[in-house]
Image (tube, rainbow, N blue to C red):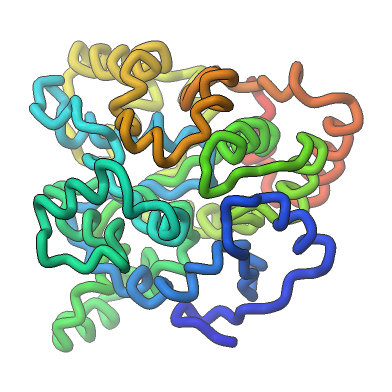
Length: 364
């Protein structure tokens, strides 16, 4: 079966299918070829609208594999673009309202019709059909300049990803097909993080979020991550799609480890890429405001208490430290056992396709 993004839905191998079944919160998973993307069943329903989502030239897209420091960078981007003076009245609004998640519908469709999301919709969009695409509607209506998060790779969003050839631009403008111009002009920030730390953080995420509800052991989660059974896998295909475009002027690649190690320098590079004029003193304030300790204090600004009741397994979340846990690099060293470390070492050596990536994720 073919879907709008020119991928084919294929049957998972028995092994991957068994691992995927450990995630009890999803009604099912599909695998797409080429690349082997693992996605919730609902992606088939939403693929066309995601592919044709109307972007604007002042949008910034944050694209990551889940748990690559996404929430941190998302807050940094929104703050830099909208709240550089730290006085924006929307700053206390939960992050998922200020900075929409493009494909959230494919994850939470079965549980999203309760809580403050539905209440907000009934108030702001009384005529909107809540049975389909509330997340997409929020993204469409978000105030500009928008910072939009996605975990989908380029080929699942637009055929014109990061293409800025004059012929294609002129052709689209003449046909008034502006909705597919988005990646030609807007800015994309992609974040790479050590996959071992990604795996550990993703395990926590999949245990506390009801739409994942992982019920296996940590050993089984490591296998699911490495073998491409977690949502948005495979990791290396995701990273490679961005790395192949790394020289494009509209794409800025961040390494989580460098952001932690050389914070001020990396913040300034990001600000320059975004074309912003933020003073040195103001940048120091933004760095403090978006620090792990400060963001942890503002946990409810990421997800509201009522949404948390609907979305999270609160018992697990409280036992394991809430949404924010450590926010560090290299936690895999004390978390993984020797067998797991060796499994990751073999996998990384086999699949890491560029020495620059290897150096950045291992040079802590």
